[in-house]
Length: 446
Image (cartoon, rainbow, N blue to C red; front, side, top):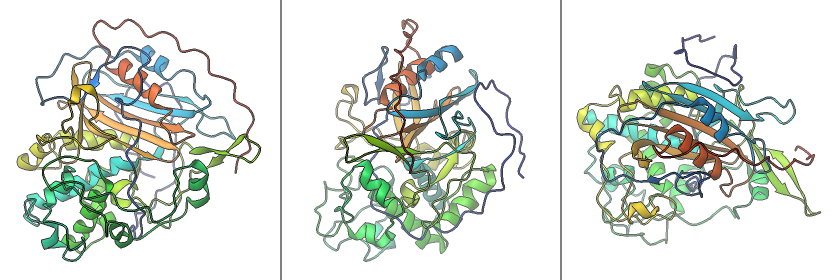
């Protein structure tokens, strides 16, 4: 068993005392169509307390950080489980203080709280790993970010598409369309519960763009699109001659000793414990609903959103990435360079303060919370909504993973409370105690 030491910091949630040995990550051979971005970004839900969330105009000078307030963080996630969210784990670290906690229920059968160090499906946070590998290949002169995708992957994209630069994949300025819905997915919890083991090949994902027009001319706008990262994953495999999983393991997981981070094969639906269960509320014929355990599901999003990790691992990864351990200076700067183009996405960079401009760099998303600029990424898979963000100087880092029972962003109010607690406005009064959650009716588990 791997027993690497952890930095000591206050913890008031369950923590594992041992774990089974994790399996070596396998090749991700299949994947499904692009996953829509998490609706849980801090900008999307009405806050429970005053909090300003926006994309910043530039890196800017570091704003003084408020003291870490564990009581406020606990209060931000109080009331779980409720009718829409089962549980949450939160990890705050950095030179300005550290704290970890969990709330709610991680297992409906045992009633246990989520393990603060437990694994979860990180969804689109996987994109940051993909961008990091491709930036490393650029630093090794194995790929030119200004060369075109068509040069490296001839025949992959529809012939009528214009030249698209590799770098435009990473900062979502490629103009690629999202692709047709070829699976029949109607966006409901019931559909996913019935099809949670389904998957498609990378070629099928990309082929869904055939016949679809470009969203805009490459380089003229920014639109968040998972297709960019699927193509980037295929490019990594073409450039290296190895699987995407192999390159992530060799370049990031092993050097950083990430003991919980894996790129599972598409036919491996397992999420090894300790891990909070993911549940979806599926409507029944009688008008009620039942909770279906979807902890096991195909990790089809692959390079776009299929990775598994934990809060300690994501904290370590973000520390290394923003601290310059994984990239040389030129590629490191790309992490903090946001293109000066309009935003065409309905799910990102859409706050009033963004003024319709881009907020995503080469691999990261830039947000501002009460005057403090953070860099990171959100992610979601059914049953899991997560995020990892940090100030550029690493004075404050935040990792969270919620377990919602729906697909409509009901966890957003808790994320707003958490953002306000982790980085409160100077004039912000202590948040009011949340109203008691409604009692949960007994539900049948699948």
